[in-house]
Image (cartoon, rainbow, N blue to C red; front, side, top):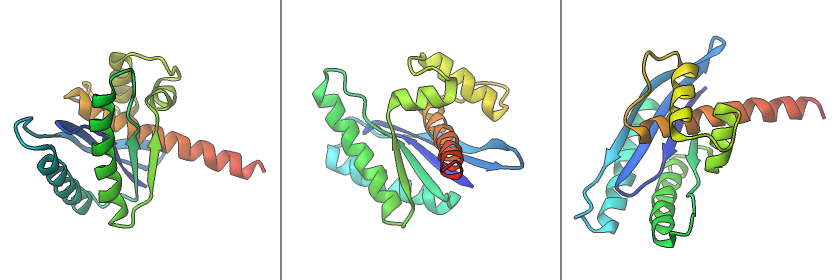
Length: 165
C-alpha cells in the first residue's frame, strides 16, 4: 500500500510518500512545493495542481491523505489553506484516487498517541516510525509524512473494527 500524505498550504505545501509492507512503513520521498507570495493566488493554485499531478504520476499512490485546515481565529489563513486542500483533493480525485481527510489532532493522536503533541514531538515520532536517522526537513514535509502514517494507522483500526462486527 502506497500513500501520499499532503500538508496543504498555498505558499508551502508538504508532501510525503510512504509504503507499507513487510510489517513496516518506509519513506519513499518527501518534500515541499514552495511558491512565491508575489504570484497571484489563482496562479499558485494552478501550479500546485500541476505539481501534485506530477507527484501522483511519479509515485503512483494507492490512496491520498490530506490534513484538514486548522482554524484558530485566523479566517484568512484558514481560507487559504482550505483552497490548497481543495486543490490537493481535486488533483487526487481527478486521477480516481481515494482521498481521506484528517484533522490535525487526529494526525497527532495516531502518530504520537497524544492529540495535543507539539510539532517537534510529531517530527520525532515520524523519524522513529520510519526508521530514519534524522527528522525529515522541512517541517511541512514531516507533517505530510505524519498525515500518511496517520492514514495507515487509521486504516488498520478500521479493518480491525470491521472484523469485530
